[in-house]
Image (cartoon, rainbow, N blue to C red; front, side, top):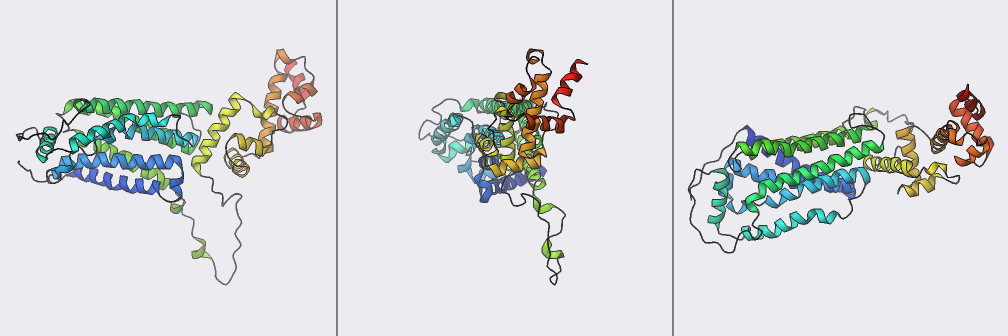
Length: 397
């Protein structure tokens, strides 16, 4: 068996940095408080999976695989895990849970893991031939005897095509999930909803371009010779994620630390912001906002006369404190202001609708959730600057 010397260049450096950063981010998202969030766990495993794939490409590209032939094709099964994991991350970031029947998405990965046993348990000559056929087709194969049939599925010859199909399907599913989130918020993909949803959209687009890159790169090279380009693109994805993590971190803000600026002889009294110590994460905020938008579209809970903050929080699967924080910080409204705004908007539609023009104002007040006509009149005047009667009269003027 002929062994070639190592090949190190800028592409090798990029891939190595991607592997190191991917492992770091994977551990980062899976540990501590971060690991308690479903989306973070999915992202952590996704980072480790793409790091494993990139590491194998790095070993093959640099010829270090000659020294660790037992690692040949060790990450092949992860080709069918990165797609589902990214989709799980997007879905969990939006809804704070995994999609229904998520286990079925892991069936191809599980089958490939079983198939991988058949080529892991092979003589070193088999692995040498597998490596040079992918990266050094100019070298001569060596003779060997298989221990067991190495591909019971008879699909390994199509691994590139199957990988492309998997990446494309799950990239599209991820984009559809993001698009639905924008649609539920009443926005298009090009419009702004929130910083977090914008970042998620950009990551989904970046991920969608990966199968398109496979289509461009693979036909230009024999076997796996062009995989280093794909691995460098994966490194871009890893570092983009790292940038977004750093961008959202409080650690890098420029405000001085109190311990460094306070005078020890003078007690410092700092004004506390409302909800400053809340544990509500940005991921949970996004999930609750999406559920709230969906609930408003389908059920209009604000029309219920007995709707309260605890009842709405229960339906959104969050706590009253967290929901109150969300309404204040993200929508700039208290619960009662939010409730009144939706009820008065509904009342304006009823007053402007010819099908309900015969209704008395008190009846409209009852329909939109007000038990007290005076409370309805007060809220209507405060929000619109007119009484309900004046508003109705202005429509016919």
